[in-house]
Image (tube, rainbow, N blue to C red):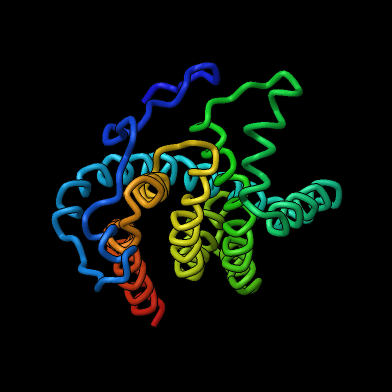
Length: 253
Protein backbone atom coordinates (compact mmCIF):
# COMPACT_ATOMS: atom_id res chain seq x y z
CA UNK A 1 0.00 0.00 0.00
CA UNK A 2 1.59 3.23 -1.13
CA UNK A 3 1.86 6.11 1.28
CA UNK A 4 -0.60 8.86 0.52
CA UNK A 5 0.75 12.38 0.61
CA UNK A 6 -0.75 14.99 2.92
CA UNK A 7 -2.19 17.10 0.10
CA UNK A 8 -4.33 14.23 -1.18
CA UNK A 9 -7.83 14.29 0.29
CA UNK A 10 -8.89 10.98 1.79
CA UNK A 11 -11.44 9.23 -0.40
CA UNK A 12 -14.95 9.55 0.89
CA UNK A 13 -16.61 6.28 1.75
CA UNK A 14 -18.44 4.52 -1.03
CA UNK A 15 -21.80 4.53 0.75
CA UNK A 16 -21.95 8.31 1.18
CA UNK A 17 -24.73 10.14 -0.59
CA UNK A 18 -25.47 13.83 -0.93
CA UNK A 19 -28.15 13.76 1.78
CA UNK A 20 -27.99 10.55 3.84
CA UNK A 21 -31.26 9.70 5.54
CA UNK A 22 -32.00 7.60 8.63
CA UNK A 23 -33.18 4.08 7.85
CA UNK A 24 -36.78 3.09 8.53
CA UNK A 25 -35.75 1.29 11.71
CA UNK A 26 -33.97 4.36 13.06
CA UNK A 27 -36.92 6.60 12.10
CA UNK A 28 -39.35 4.30 13.92
CA UNK A 29 -37.21 4.36 17.07
CA UNK A 30 -36.91 8.16 16.86
CA UNK A 31 -40.72 8.44 16.88
CA UNK A 32 -40.95 6.41 20.06
CA UNK A 33 -41.72 3.06 18.50
CA UNK A 34 -40.00 -0.23 19.36
CA UNK A 35 -36.50 -0.57 17.96
CA UNK A 36 -36.04 -3.60 15.71
CA UNK A 37 -32.49 -4.66 14.95
CA UNK A 38 -31.97 -4.13 11.20
CA UNK A 39 -30.21 -7.22 9.87
CA UNK A 40 -30.65 -5.97 6.30
CA UNK A 41 -28.58 -2.92 7.21
CA UNK A 42 -25.86 -5.18 8.61
CA UNK A 43 -25.85 -7.34 5.48
CA UNK A 44 -25.63 -4.26 3.26
CA UNK A 45 -22.76 -2.50 5.01
CA UNK A 46 -20.78 -5.38 6.51
CA UNK A 47 -18.52 -5.62 3.41
CA UNK A 48 -17.27 -2.09 4.08
CA UNK A 49 -16.03 -3.24 7.48
CA UNK A 50 -13.82 -5.74 5.68
CA UNK A 51 -11.99 -2.82 4.05
CA UNK A 52 -11.75 -1.14 7.43
CA UNK A 53 -10.38 -4.34 8.95
CA UNK A 54 -7.62 -4.46 6.34
CA UNK A 55 -6.61 -0.92 7.26
CA UNK A 56 -6.66 -1.82 10.96
CA UNK A 57 -4.50 -4.89 10.32
CA UNK A 58 -2.11 -2.95 8.08
CA UNK A 59 -1.54 -0.26 10.69
CA UNK A 60 -1.38 -2.76 13.55
CA UNK A 61 1.07 -5.20 11.94
CA UNK A 62 3.65 -2.55 11.09
CA UNK A 63 3.07 -0.65 14.34
CA UNK A 64 3.54 -3.82 16.40
CA UNK A 65 6.67 -4.74 14.43
CA UNK A 66 8.11 -1.31 15.21
CA UNK A 67 7.09 -1.68 18.86
CA UNK A 68 8.82 -5.07 19.16
CA UNK A 69 12.00 -3.70 17.58
CA UNK A 70 11.94 -0.71 19.91
CA UNK A 71 11.27 -2.98 22.87
CA UNK A 72 14.22 -5.22 22.05
CA UNK A 73 16.57 -2.23 21.84
CA UNK A 74 15.30 -0.69 25.09
CA UNK A 75 15.40 -4.02 26.94
CA UNK A 76 18.98 -4.60 25.78
CA UNK A 77 19.97 -1.13 27.00
CA UNK A 78 18.30 -1.70 30.36
CA UNK A 79 20.07 -5.03 30.76
CA UNK A 80 23.46 -3.63 29.66
CA UNK A 81 23.35 -1.07 32.49
CA UNK A 82 24.89 1.80 30.51
CA UNK A 83 23.98 4.88 32.62
CA UNK A 84 23.48 7.48 29.87
CA UNK A 85 21.52 5.18 27.57
CA UNK A 86 19.44 3.89 30.47
CA UNK A 87 18.44 7.45 31.37
CA UNK A 88 17.38 8.11 27.77
CA UNK A 89 15.40 4.87 27.73
CA UNK A 90 13.74 5.73 31.05
CA UNK A 91 12.66 9.14 29.75
CA UNK A 92 11.26 7.56 26.58
CA UNK A 93 9.30 4.93 28.52
CA UNK A 94 7.84 7.49 30.92
CA UNK A 95 6.82 9.88 28.12
CA UNK A 96 5.37 7.07 26.02
CA UNK A 97 3.35 5.45 28.79
CA UNK A 98 2.11 8.64 30.43
CA UNK A 99 0.78 10.48 27.38
CA UNK A 100 -2.36 9.47 25.45
CA UNK A 101 -1.94 7.88 22.03
CA UNK A 102 -4.35 10.47 20.63
CA UNK A 103 -2.04 13.30 21.71
CA UNK A 104 0.95 11.49 20.19
CA UNK A 105 -0.91 11.07 16.90
CA UNK A 106 -1.94 14.72 16.85
CA UNK A 107 1.67 15.74 17.41
CA UNK A 108 2.86 13.52 14.53
CA UNK A 109 0.06 14.47 12.14
CA UNK A 110 -0.44 18.16 12.93
CA UNK A 111 2.71 19.15 14.83
CA UNK A 112 5.48 17.73 12.66
CA UNK A 113 4.39 19.65 9.52
CA UNK A 114 5.09 22.86 11.45
CA UNK A 115 8.68 21.63 11.74
CA UNK A 116 8.90 20.75 8.07
CA UNK A 117 8.19 17.00 8.35
CA UNK A 118 5.08 16.02 6.43
CA UNK A 119 4.08 12.40 6.95
CA UNK A 120 1.09 10.51 5.61
CA UNK A 121 -1.67 9.50 8.00
CA UNK A 122 -0.68 5.84 7.68
CA UNK A 123 2.94 6.54 8.61
CA UNK A 124 1.87 8.70 11.56
CA UNK A 125 -0.38 5.89 12.80
CA UNK A 126 2.38 3.27 12.51
CA UNK A 127 4.97 5.45 14.25
CA UNK A 128 2.46 6.39 16.94
CA UNK A 129 1.60 2.76 17.69
CA UNK A 130 5.27 1.82 17.62
CA UNK A 131 6.18 4.67 19.98
CA UNK A 132 3.47 3.70 22.46
CA UNK A 133 3.94 -0.06 22.18
CA UNK A 134 7.73 0.05 22.37
CA UNK A 135 7.66 1.05 26.03
CA UNK A 136 5.29 -1.77 26.97
CA UNK A 137 7.24 -4.32 24.94
CA UNK A 138 10.47 -3.13 26.58
CA UNK A 139 9.11 -3.77 30.06
CA UNK A 140 7.88 -7.26 29.14
CA UNK A 141 11.18 -8.20 27.50
CA UNK A 142 13.28 -6.70 30.30
CA UNK A 143 11.34 -8.72 32.85
CA UNK A 144 11.99 -11.86 30.82
CA UNK A 145 15.72 -11.21 30.55
CA UNK A 146 16.11 -10.39 34.23
CA UNK A 147 14.16 -13.47 35.28
CA UNK A 148 16.93 -15.78 34.02
CA UNK A 149 19.10 -16.60 37.08
CA UNK A 150 22.65 -15.27 37.00
CA UNK A 151 23.97 -18.73 37.85
CA UNK A 152 22.82 -20.00 34.45
CA UNK A 153 24.99 -17.42 32.73
CA UNK A 154 27.94 -18.43 34.90
CA UNK A 155 27.36 -22.12 34.19
CA UNK A 156 27.24 -21.43 30.47
CA UNK A 157 30.61 -19.67 30.61
CA UNK A 158 32.04 -22.56 32.63
CA UNK A 159 30.90 -24.96 29.89
CA UNK A 160 32.87 -22.96 27.33
CA UNK A 161 30.06 -20.91 25.80
CA UNK A 162 31.02 -17.48 24.55
CA UNK A 163 28.84 -14.41 25.11
CA UNK A 164 26.84 -14.86 21.90
CA UNK A 165 26.22 -18.56 22.54
CA UNK A 166 25.17 -17.85 26.11
CA UNK A 167 22.76 -15.19 24.93
CA UNK A 168 21.18 -17.17 22.08
CA UNK A 169 21.16 -20.66 23.60
CA UNK A 170 20.60 -20.02 27.29
CA UNK A 171 19.20 -16.59 28.07
CA UNK A 172 16.96 -15.64 25.12
CA UNK A 173 15.01 -18.95 24.88
CA UNK A 174 14.06 -18.73 28.55
CA UNK A 175 13.37 -15.00 28.38
CA UNK A 176 11.07 -15.45 25.38
CA UNK A 177 9.05 -18.15 27.10
CA UNK A 178 8.61 -15.94 30.16
CA UNK A 179 7.85 -12.78 28.16
CA UNK A 180 5.35 -14.38 25.76
CA UNK A 181 2.18 -13.74 27.83
CA UNK A 182 3.11 -10.08 28.26
CA UNK A 183 4.01 -9.66 24.60
CA UNK A 184 0.72 -11.22 23.44
CA UNK A 185 -1.21 -8.99 25.85
CA UNK A 186 0.61 -5.96 24.43
CA UNK A 187 -0.20 -7.04 20.87
CA UNK A 188 -3.91 -7.22 21.72
CA UNK A 189 -3.67 -3.89 23.53
CA UNK A 190 -2.08 -2.17 20.52
CA UNK A 191 -4.65 -3.55 18.07
CA UNK A 192 -7.42 -2.16 20.26
CA UNK A 193 -5.57 1.14 20.60
CA UNK A 194 -5.40 1.36 16.79
CA UNK A 195 -9.04 2.47 16.89
CA UNK A 196 -7.73 5.94 17.80
CA UNK A 197 -6.23 6.41 14.31
CA UNK A 198 -9.70 7.26 13.00
CA UNK A 199 -9.06 10.68 14.57
CA UNK A 200 -6.57 11.46 11.79
CA UNK A 201 -9.00 10.38 9.04
CA UNK A 202 -7.77 6.83 8.48
CA UNK A 203 -10.63 4.62 7.32
CA UNK A 204 -10.25 1.82 9.85
CA UNK A 205 -13.15 -0.10 11.38
CA UNK A 206 -13.80 2.61 13.99
CA UNK A 207 -13.97 5.23 11.25
CA UNK A 208 -16.50 3.09 9.37
CA UNK A 209 -18.67 2.66 12.47
CA UNK A 210 -18.66 6.36 13.34
CA UNK A 211 -19.51 7.26 9.75
CA UNK A 212 -22.48 4.89 9.68
CA UNK A 213 -23.78 6.13 13.02
CA UNK A 214 -23.45 9.73 11.90
CA UNK A 215 -25.22 9.25 8.58
CA UNK A 216 -27.92 6.67 9.20
CA UNK A 217 -28.32 6.67 13.01
CA UNK A 218 -28.23 2.87 13.12
CA UNK A 219 -26.06 2.92 16.22
CA UNK A 220 -26.68 -0.62 17.41
CA UNK A 221 -26.06 -2.17 14.00
CA UNK A 222 -22.84 -0.19 13.51
CA UNK A 223 -21.56 -1.09 16.98
CA UNK A 224 -22.51 -4.73 16.43
CA UNK A 225 -20.43 -4.87 13.25
CA UNK A 226 -17.58 -3.07 15.02
CA UNK A 227 -17.55 -5.54 17.92
CA UNK A 228 -17.75 -8.57 15.62
CA UNK A 229 -14.87 -7.25 13.50
CA UNK A 230 -12.61 -6.79 16.53
CA UNK A 231 -13.55 -10.22 17.87
CA UNK A 232 -12.64 -11.83 14.55
CA UNK A 233 -9.25 -10.11 14.65
CA UNK A 234 -8.43 -10.52 18.34
CA UNK A 235 -9.84 -13.90 19.37
CA UNK A 236 -7.37 -15.94 17.24
CA UNK A 237 -4.48 -13.94 18.72
CA UNK A 238 -5.76 -14.55 22.24
CA UNK A 239 -6.16 -18.28 21.59
CA UNK A 240 -2.67 -18.46 20.06
CA UNK A 241 -1.23 -16.65 23.06
CA UNK A 242 -2.88 -19.09 25.48
CA UNK A 243 -1.57 -22.05 23.48
CA UNK A 244 1.98 -20.65 23.43
CA UNK A 245 1.88 -19.95 27.15
CA UNK A 246 0.83 -23.53 27.92
CA UNK A 247 3.44 -24.91 25.56
CA UNK A 248 6.23 -22.89 27.16
CA UNK A 249 5.01 -23.82 30.65
CA UNK A 250 5.17 -27.50 29.68
CA UNK A 251 8.68 -27.05 28.23
CA UNK A 252 9.93 -25.44 31.47
CA UNK A 253 8.78 -28.37 33.62
